[in-house]
Image (cartoon, rainbow, N blue to C red; front, side):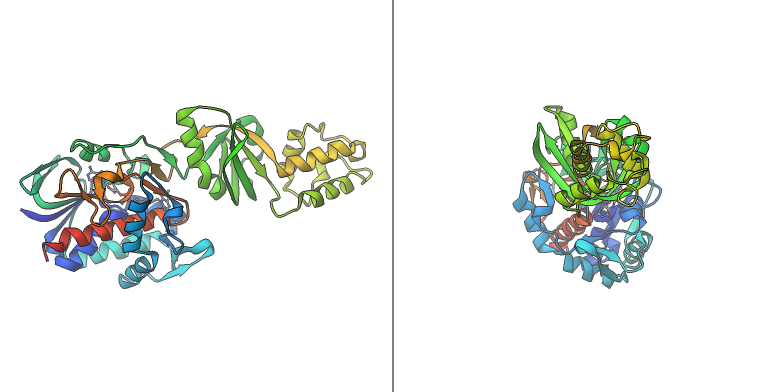
Length: 412
Ligand SMILES: Cc1cc2nc3c(=O)[nH]c(=O)nc-3n(C[C@H](O)[C@H](O)[C@H](O)COP(=O)(O)OP(=O)(O)OC[C@H]3O[C@@H](n4cnc5c(N)ncnc54)[C@H](O)[C@@H]3O)c2cc1C
């Protein structure tokens, strides 16, 4: 019989393997990963730079069915502990804007290598290309069924991740291992995801990046807002600003109740009254046309697109022909360009899964299943998702630490 089998060699599974190995010895830990390599998703994090934590991680940055569950887990392994842990395996870290923690070398591959090497040096046995198809608890033990063979273990940790980003191993199959034991899964939808809008309006500005403030409104009522870098895409809005609030668009998409719009403030640091005065001044420059009216204020293609969105055309029109009301309408459109939202870019494009296994069926002090006491679950498979900014990896480490401490307790 094995002592500990960890299912899933992603962020949480790898960290849990190291935590367990350090307490009871790696030879007592078996890590099973369905893909050819461990940590495929980890490699893609932070655009390859791995935003591995956030010093402001507290429950206000998480979405879940039970905030106190999340807080208990975070309290047991706060960001400072994560930083200490990574330094202990050789990853020097740096805190950047908004409390985001990165490896100093800015390489996700280095984070993965250090985790993998530490697990290996502690003696953890890792088997890749090994998909677990069922967990069968019986008499204080669990049979772990894979396509190749079966393992009987005293403790099993499900670190199978979420459904987001299928190309990096995301799948909804992992949830099935636990729902088969009676666990309840809340509806899944994409989080940290791009926003789809009416295409006609944005296709001309595809590829343009701008610091902007976005506001999502449901039937005119503000439901989310964010000020960060925005990237226009041919399907709608991407970049950190859109990803941060894309969860709301995805949640709306599955319900399709009401009208969701996004308003874009293209110059969030410019006062509305100042902008009106500026536009009125620009309209006095004889000999100029709308085509170059916003040059020096907005990127050319973006400026021209906003002029059209304000209903001012053609671009060959002399700026001096604009009425004061038209000037003000242009300034207002720059501050509040409203687009219809049609949905999100979907689960495959998402970084994280919203929804998951109901937390009430797990103990936050141990991550132990309340239905099958030899089974534990951590990471994204649970109904916990964090904001963009290192909060999801912090959740992976913190939950992995909590489970590892509990699973090894009686084995020490
Ligand atoms: C492109 C991208 C960028 C991201 N950037 C960041 C970031 O910078 N900061 C941040 O905090 N978060 C980021 N995230 C989110 C973060 O990567 C995840 O929340 C985190 O990896 C979840 O950890 P996990 O261990 O629960 O799941 P995963 O890391 O997904 O690991 C689960 C593992 O289990 C394996 N598995 C699944 N089912 C089975 C099975 N039946 N048998 C065996 N193995 C199985 C999978 O193949 C996978 O390797 C990003 C996500 C993506 C997609």
